[in-house]
Amino acid sequence: RLSAHGAQELAAGARLRSLRAALALVRALRAGVREQLVCGPRALRTADDEPAPATGDPLQHLVVRRGPPAPYALAA
Image: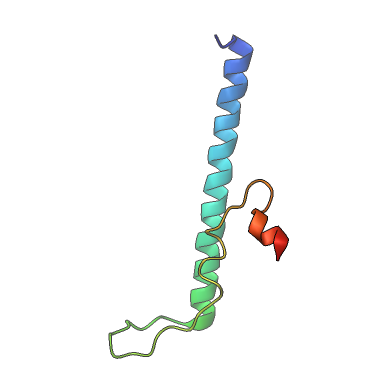
C-alpha cells in the first residue's frame, strides 16, 4: 500500500518526467527548425533520385547492451 507521502512523490516524479520529455521535444523541434533555416527547404525525393547520404551508423542507437559481454567476444 502506498502512503500519502509516497503518492505525492510519485506524482511529482511523473510531472517532472513529463516536463523533461516536453523540453526534449521542444529542443528537437528547435534543432529541426534551425537545420531547416540553414539548409533551406527540402525537395521531395522520387525513386529516380540518388539515395540520401548516410548520416551515420543506422543501427548505432538501436543496440542496448546489458550485462557482461558474450563469451565468444571475450575469446576474440
